[in-house]
Length: 268
Image 1 (tube, rainbow, N blue to C red):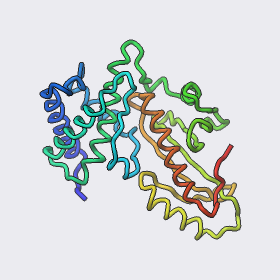
Image 2 (cartoon, rainbow, N blue to C red):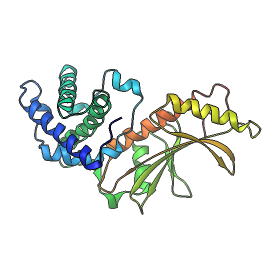
Image 3 (cartoon, rainbow, N blue to C red):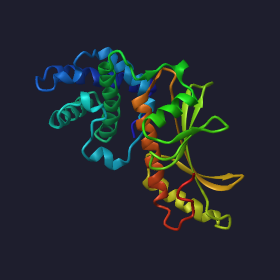
Image 4 (cartoon, helix red, strand yellow):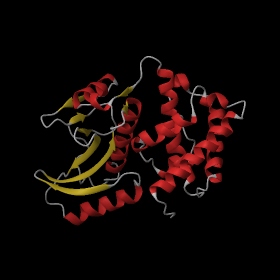
């Protein structure tokens, strides 16, 4: 594992993006990928929104990487494949290790796809300013995207149908953070703690893109996971919905490993 300071990592990423930008613009068949975008904008957006990109299952980085931009701004599949290969070669030139490149390239490209989509938004940008973000606007947004959501008494947004597994979204106005919270409640209070922990350890060994723990609550033990990111620099709604769906998907993957039904499969 390579240890770098935050400033060293930022410098190397910026250099990799610079190589990538120049390389793409020199290739006639893919130069339109950066139409109307500057290198400065790409670098700026990556560092603003990188915390919103959810880590994927390891297999995702080894299989065909899908475009995340809206269909209106997507390019042809062979061209996107060339974009990905070009970027990975540029990251190698920038000094990243072979083992680092698949995940890093996919994560950076996800933010680049958002930047491209924002360029196409024209007069209707889909990025909320930090002062606009609150629990009601997120609840309304989920509902507008065919996901049942409600604001509960404590202010958390509970989202049920429309996601692979129900979860809560918390808006921390003080710290300007969005926090996803997933919980699965134990089916019995008599199950030994060791069984819960063994399942949790197995989940963490296989669902490596999300950290799960066993927590004691007034209502008994729960399988617990959370993910947070900052919206201090604005909140791109496409990335919010994508992250929410990926969080719910990872929790469903975890609960599907519960062959002995130690936890309730769904909560209502």
